[in-house]
Length: 152
Image (cartoon, rainbow, N blue to C red; front, side, top):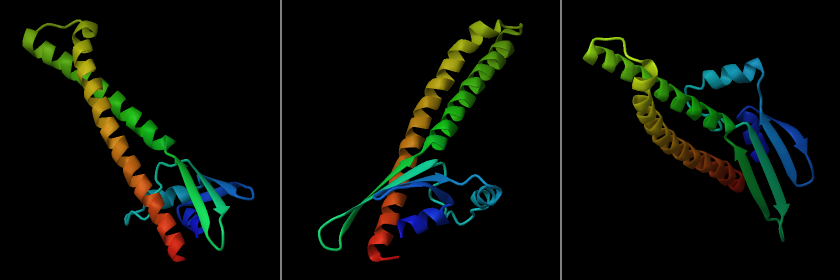
C-alpha cells in the first residue's frame, strides 16, 4: 500500500532489498507536467527528492513501517527566497538613499545595512516556512501510513 502511494506521488523505486526500498522522484516529462497541474493538491510529496521505506515483520501478522523523506528541494527553494529578500533589501536601500540625498550613493556602503535587514528577515521567514512545511510533510507521511494500516 505504501509503495502504491509512492507511485501515485510520481516516485520510482531505485533500490529494493528485503526490508528496505529506496524511491526517488520521477523527473520525466509526464511526472513534471503532473506536478505542475496538480490543482487538487493530491501530490503531497512535492519538493521531496528521496523516500526510504523500511518494513520489519513483527510477531503475528503485524509489521513496523518507517518512512524517511529528504526535502532537499524545499530547502533549496527557501534559500532562493532568502537571496531574493537580500537583493531586494539592498536595492531598496540604494533607492531610498538616492531619493533622500539627491546624489548618486556609494552602492556598497548604503546597500549593506538594508541587505542585512532583508537577509535577516528572509532567514526568519524561511525558517518558519520550512518548519511549517516539515510539519505538513510529517502529517502527509503519517496519512500514507494510516491508509496502509486500514488496508488501502
